[in-house]
Image: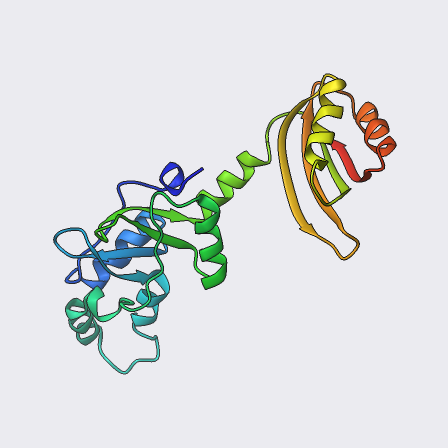
Length: 216
């Protein structure tokens, strides 16, 4: 699965001369938290976040009059507030997990998706990643969900898949987690068309420890 399969396109963007108030209104109406700033050719110049815009809003403690505040805000543009350096981006051909890694690493909730010429072709957000995660784990599909502790190494998945196939089961999803200090990995697997008890008896008989099992 690639970023292009999950991004929102075309992206909603603004230009540097866009008034601060207009950008903030756009974010609030569209429920965005970040906006790419582009030039006339659609190339990325920077990013502005809802936090940037809210910090630019006047404090209730200000000594300025309403008229003075409105005048100053009408002169403020996103160019004066946007982040120009080190804007984290992703390409449409990168794996979706790479976009997730970048978001976690940089503690941001969304990334502009740019082509080779730095033109913004979309935006991918943490919500898009969560939706992909839900699908990959087979959420919403009825079956038996098992969390297993299995020996890390070659052939483990093949062995499990064969055992489940021999029972007539259909694997809906598989997720693996880091190997622990004992040399075992946690495996999350969802199976349909076989009973929970059959799965537990078979897998425990293969020395795979069932940490959790439930019908969902």
